[in-house]
Image (cartoon, rainbow, N blue to C red; front, side, top):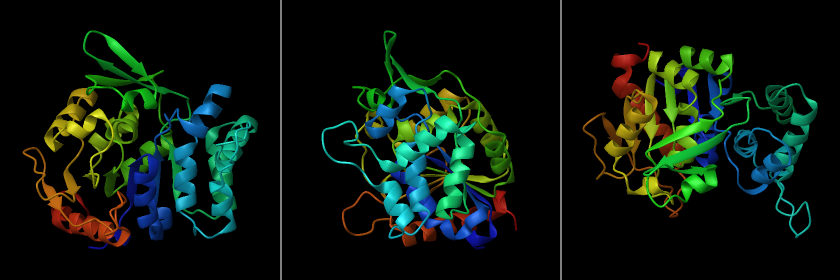
Length: 301
């Protein structure tokens, strides 16, 4: 079985989701991205402080990775201002999406407009159209608010919550219900992978879906408390926090990583440069291996 025969939903944030989406961009309308929108750092964080809005940075990154990187549109949306003035450090794509968000009736309208401008056929949705922040709780009632603070916590949080609690779009639920394959990660465990799962509509839809759900591990240890966790500790943490374990298998580069909870597919995913980005061709081959290994269990014949 080939990936191109399937409907695929990829969920996450940061550069990890962008890598998956760019790898599978040939699927076009058979591919859907559901993007984390809790970032509060950098250009995105500055815009969120100015006016309540969803975090646009990961959406902008995913949009530009779905078009030719040498195109004018990609260069325009990736352009970053330098200097120390008000524009310094801002990404032009973030500013455009932010302004569209102020004049459009809803974020989804802004995303659709930019998709048309860039010629992106793949559907991209925010995990929610309602602004929300990540909250991490750890022993003795201590709490950290915001992605930046959560990633810098000295120990693994006991739990994460979204404040306020938000709902996802009906389109996200419909895409998950229609999916043959659901992909989580790679990316920061606490701030890219987990936030969409904290949206109950999304986690419930994944759990109820007949699709095979695969979690893609990072190539190297991340800079967060999650770096100290084994794979099964991560899976148990997910189960404890969202009330179920929606993951059916894991794709992992490190052959020493094993699990007593789910099957692990070991594949060489490195691009050979020492980068923490997954090689696109190797990632596609790993996903096809996963599809064929588990098609009798949950994928269409």
